[in-house]
Image (cartoon, rainbow, N blue to C red; front, side, top):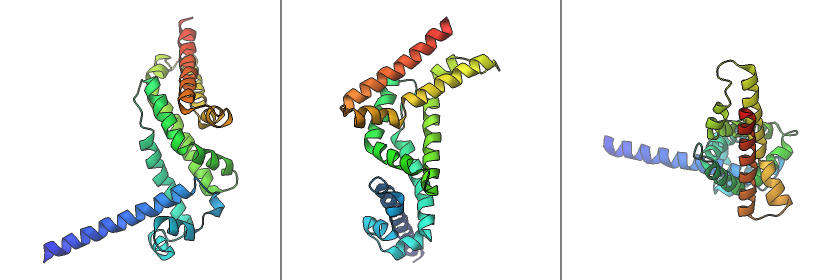
Length: 209
C-alpha cells in the first residue's frame, strides 16, 4: 500500500513539473513572436494547453510567471550555446546555430529593454551570459595576453581583446549579416569566423611587437 502511494505521488509530481515546464516554455516561445506587453495569461495558457487557473496556481501572477521564465530561458540558452573551448570554428558554428534559433528573440528583447522591466532583466542576463561565454571559449587567447600578474598594461590588453570578441560575436553582428545583408547562414558563419580570427590574430601580433 505504501509502495503504491509512493508511486502515485511520484507520478503526480512528475506531471506537475511537466506542466510547469510547459507553461514556462510557452511564455518563452511567445516572447519570440510578440512584444512583452502583448503577452497575456490567456495566450500563455492556450500555448501551453492549460487553463489560466493552472498558470496562476503554479506562478501566482503574470509577474511571477515572467520572473521564472527569465531563469528558465537562461538555463535553456546556456545549454544551446555550449561550445568547444579553444575551437574558434566550432564555437562560431554553435553560436550561429543559436542565433538562427534565438537571434530574432534576442533582438526583440533588446528593442524593448528600455520600456519593460522584466525584459530589461532578461536582456541584462543575456549580455552577462554572452560575455562569460566569450571569456570561457576564448580563455586561452585571453590568458595568453597576461594580466594575471597584476600588470595593468597586460590587463588592459586582455580586457580590450575580450571587448572586441564580445562585439564580434554579438547578436547584432549576426543581424547585420543575416538579416540586413540577407546572407545565407553558411556565409554568415564564415564571415563571423573571419572577423573573430582577425581579432585574435591582431592581438597576437600586438603582443609580439
